[in-house]
Amino acid sequence: MALKEGKLYYSISEVAQHFDVASSLLRYWETEFQALQPKRNGRGKRFYTTDDIAIVERIYFLVKIKGHTLQGAKDKLKTDKKTVDTSIQILDKLQNVKIFLKKLRAEI
Image 1: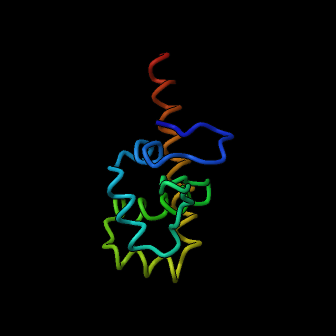
Image 2: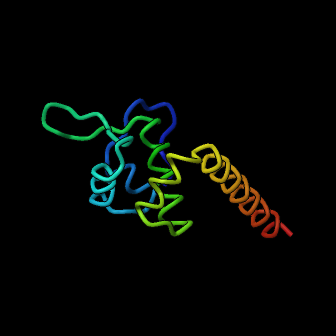
């Protein structure tokens, strides 16, 4: 599921569905990663900004795609965040190329 463009805040369920993970995993990552601190309303409901979602994307990439441990992901984010961001951008571009090629193949 793609997140709707132009929204200021996203619920935890929207973010969890976007990354295909459980909401409880996002709550757990909040306790493990200091940088991930979504805003909360008076009742404690979480609201993720685009910056929060970028942090979740980095964590997801390192833990779920690259297979790092949580400590390994923390270390990588502290020492080499720029490389992680570059890798995510490359992966996104490759996924777009894959989608384009699948559509092209279907038309042939």
